[in-house]
Image 1 (cartoon, rainbow, N blue to C red):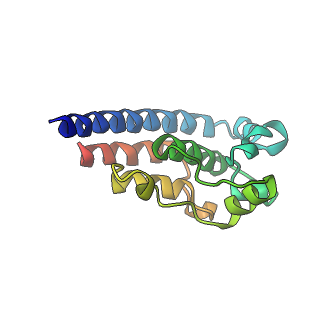
Image 2 (tube, rainbow, N blue to C red):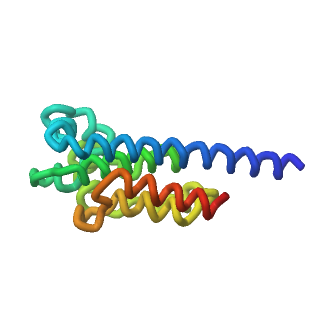
Length: 154
């Protein structure tokens, strides 16, 4: 009986996280419409603490031009941490962290938290895609995929 209650509680917590993530993605989608603002938020010089937490996108680390997809990568880092309980990229130095973020894949989130539905893992994987052309373009797309995932998991 206790195991069943714990499993039910885990599902409620997961659904709450999915809902919050969808709302954040929608909000970021609105911010994306104001591209100048978003670029100012994601430029390394204006927010240096993002690098400390591994939230800078590979294109930012390479000094390339960024757009809203760079912010969606950072949002993916936050989602990963919410769901997995740890950051997708870690390092014992800034150089190591930057290298891993730009070049190495993150750990499969389902190995860290097997309760996460595959569809949510797929959303986070796409958000953390190294190639920005393969990443989501708008936060609304993420929110729609999370809603679909909730429908499948519910």
